[in-house]
Structures are given as C-alpha cells and as structure tokens.
Amino acid sequence: MSEFSGDSKSAVLSALDYTVISIYFVIILGLSLYSARPKQIPSQNPDSEADLDDSEANQNTSADSYFLADRSISWFGVGCSLFMSNIGSEHFVALAGSGASSGLVVSCFEWMASLFVGIILGYVFTPLLLRLRIKTLPELLTRRFSPACGAIVAFNTVLGAIATKICVTLYSGALILTVLLDWNPTKALIFLLGITALYTLIGGLSAVVLTEIVQSFVLLAGAIPLAILALNQVNGWNSVVNYYQLEQISYKLHLFFRNQEPHPPNDIDPFPWTGILFGLPIMQLWYWCTDQVVVQRVLAAKSVNHAKGGCLLTGFAKISVPFLMVFPGVIARVLYENVRQNPNHAYVILLSNLLPNGLLGLLIAAMLAALMSSLASTFTSTSAILVYDFYIKFLRKNASDREQIWMGKFVICLLTLIGLAWVPLVSQVSDELYVYIQSMISYIAPPTAVVYLAAVTMKWITPTAALLTLILGGFLGILRMTAELICAFLEFPALSQPWNAFVYSNFLHFAIFETAFSFFVMFGTSFITESKSKTELDAFYNVNQNRNAKDSGNVRDNERESVRNEDIIRIRGTGGNQSQILNGNVGSESNETGIPRRLWDSMWKIDVDLVLDSFAIILVALVTSTMAHFA
Image 1 (cartoon, helix red, strand yellow):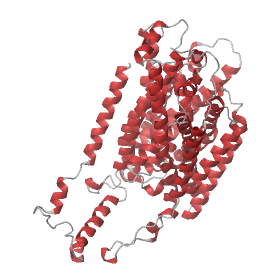
Image 2: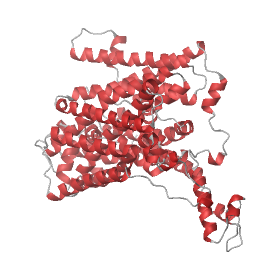
Image 3: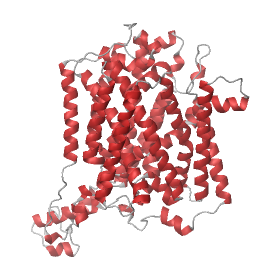
Image 4: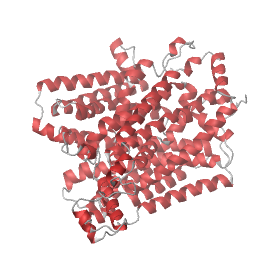
C-alpha cells in the first residue's frame, strides 16, 4: 500500500477541470433564469368551463410562489432538494475526518437520519403540516399553542441561521478552498456568495429546488468514483479490516459493540452506544422535522403523497452518504500516514491523489454545489420566517404579495451582507470554536423538538406547558454551554461529581438528560394548567376530514382537475360534445374492448399509498439490516 507521509498537497487542476467547473456555474445560472421566467398557463377553451382567475394565472408573482414554489414541487424535486439542503460542504471534511479518527460509528448519524426523514417526517409530520397549509414551522406552534411559542422558535431559528449556519458553511468552504485548491478563500467565498444570492433572488425557492436537483446529481457523480477508486486502491475491504486488526483498533469498524474489541489506553469513545440509541434520536427529530431549512421543501410539495415520496427518496439517498464520505475516511487512514495525524485532511488527500483530471473538477464542483446549496437553503428559509412570522404579523398585516416578495429579497440581500461580513473573520475561526458552535446547536435542540412532537401528536399538552418547556429547556442548554466554555478557558479546582457530570458529560448523554427534563416540565405543567377547548383542538387536528379519503392527500386537487381535463380532451378528440361534460358522463363511453373506459382505466390505476408504504417498509428493513451488519 502506498503511503503519504508529507503534508496534504493541493490539487493541481487542468484545463479540463476548470472547464467542468465553469460549465457547472453556467448551468446553475441558466436554471435560475429558467425558473424565473413568466409562468404562462395555456388558455382553455370556453366550452371546458376551466377559466382561471387572476391569482392562478399569475402564480409567479405571488408570495407563495416565491417562498413555497407555489406548493407545486413533485416528489422528485422534494427528495433531491431535501438531500442537498442537508449535505453541506462541511460533510466532506467532517464525515471523512470522523471516519478516519473515530471509525464507522459516525455513520449512525446518517443511517438514523434515513429513518427520521423517510418515516417520521414523511408519515407523522407531513400529513398535518400540509393539511394545515402552514407557511413556516413557527406558525404550527402559534396555531397549536400560542403566539409566544411561535415567536420564540422563530427568533431562535433566525438567530441560529445568522450566528451558526452561515458561519459554519463559510468556515468549511474556506477550509476546502485553502487546503484542497490553495485558492484565496476571501475572493472565492465572495464569488460563491454572490452567485448563490443571485440565483436565490431571481427565482426564490423554485430556483433553489431546480438547482439542487442538478447539484444532487453532480455530487453523486463526483463522490461515487472517488469511493470506488479508494476501495480499489486499498485492494478491497478485507485489507482495511486486516489493517485495523493489526493496529488493534478494529473496534472502530463497529457501530455499537465497540467495547468488545481491544482499545488503546486512555481512549475515550466520543460516540457511546447509549448516546447513539437514546440521545441521537431527539437530535434527528429536531433537524429533520422541526428545522425550517429542511421542512420548507415539504411545505412546498404539491400533495401529501408527493411529500411522502420525496421524504422516502431522501431516506434512501442518505443511506449512501456513509459509503461515499465516511468509508473513504476509514480507507484514507490505511493508505496515508498523514491522515492519522490530520484526519480532517482525509477526503482532501484522497481526492488530490486518486482522481484523474475531469473527475477532479467534477467533485470540486460537487463540493462547491454543497456549499452553495447550504447557503441558498439558509437564505430562503430565513427570509420566509422573517417575512411571515415577523414582518406580516407585527409590521404590515395587510402587505401585498409584491411587498412580501420584495421584503424577502431584501432579507436575502441582508443575509448576503452578513455572510460577506463573516468572510474576513473566517480565517480566525478555530477548530475549537467550530466544535462549540455545533455543540450549541445540540444543546438547544431537545426542548424545541419535544414541543414540536407534542404539537403534532399530543392533544392534551397545554400552551403554558409548551411555553415553559421552551424557556426552561432552552435555559438548561444555554447553562451547559456557558459552563463548558468557562471551564474550558479558565482553570477551576476539581468540581463536585454532579457538577462535573453536568459540564463534562458526553453531548449525546446530555441530550438524553435535557430531553427527559423537557418532557418532565411539559407533562407536569400540563396537569396543572388549562388546555385549549375541544373545539379549538378539533379545528386544529381534524382539518379537512370531510374530504373523500382518496383525495385527502391532495393539497389543491390538481390530480382530479388533471384527470378531468384529460377526459375533456379525449371526448373532443373522439367527437364528444359539451353535454357529456356538463352531465358528468365524461369517461363513460366504452373503448374498443367493450369495457367502460372508467372501469378500464381503474384496472390499471396504481395505488399510490400502497406503493409508498411498501417503499417505507423497504427503507426500514434496509437501514436496520445495514446497521446490524456493522454493529
């Protein structure tokens, strides 16, 4: 096996690589312009009685069109966009680095995410979210509990986007640009910020989703060859297993039963199995089911079934992430000596040493795509919250669609300026601060996730209980974060055992404690405070229950109207008349077999719910079997 003992070298790009990267940017800008084109709906024949009102004929000028893509995204767009909004540039560095240092255990984060996005988001949260037709997630808490709950979560979301997400994305992007390409990170980040802001401003969420579909293919097309080349370079997975056994670190190739293998002295497992099984789920619930950046794609789906399909597609895609990013890091430790001292350089070293020209440019384009996708997702979701949850509620309740769109664009410009202000400071951000920023997110997540879960599944939880859970649970997380920072930078005498456990316990174990505390506050307060009336709760949970069960998954009845229009065209094409349409006889004529057309069509109709449920079962089986194999 070859060894790389020197420093991680920068990749040398050829003209072919630069051509590939340039084509990528041209395609992204072209798609943004395409998505912003005026949406002209074909005129209907007056005989069809399908005239459209002005609001439908001018969908591209409505606020819903800009912030929610007019709620018209198909399952494929939802799935690709969910996937790319999650995969940021930091994934390439962090997942491969964690694979090189800690082993396969970090794969649990991705494989467990498959279940939460595919099953919990798709089947537990999505039906209620789309039936309520909410525009932002804080609106869910406002309608279920109180405006105070919605305002707190909205404020935390905006603050988190400004203080952490933009900074984290730029930090990881600068690391990639500097270490991998030896580019000037300041100029490159300003360019990427400008391109991202431009296509987000032009087309809103429609442009973001359209570009993310392309970006998902670019990412897979670049990452798959590298994973295959890395495995081939190490002569197969058995060689990796043999190396880890010789080094007496074979426990790193397991997910849960790591204590059964030999450990080096003083080796502390950063991902204990108890934390993975009981602490990680609440983190996954928070990210995949309560984060506006992620759930905004689901809110923009054209129907519940399309949203479910998109969530399942993302779930299957997430299964591949460890094989594309974590496993290469594990392999890099075997191939290159330098990775053992600098695990964060694992992916960069693999890329610069194994990929030929052309593929190198493609994967760099994929990494830039991940960075831009993260920024665009943050821009669109934050602007939607600021417009819907603050501007309209507190400043301009009667704001027109045009005013809402311009305010959203103003917010995107403001966020871009904040990003530009971060750029000079990115080089000063240390690895320790990066870790603390990630820890801060994990400390404030449990109470928010608990309250959202209660809003969707627990009718008896009171508004006062939800508010106290957000306040007290959030305070507990901030207290832990503050104490950890103080103890890290100042020297203190030995702490008592309870305080020592509170400050220095594993972050996943603390998530278990904070979750239990949040449930205790919420349940206890609900027993002594007044709930909303039964009428209010029924109005919230039983929205549109009088719909036909077959059409309950549709948000706008697009599918029924489409079938009707197709029937109209069919009759006119065969000499039918308007009386058939008006009398409800559409489709009653027989075909050449003598079977009534409605009956004939129904024989070939696919039961979408059955198909989705089948894929959900396959997803659960695939994830559990994969995790069991590496347990």
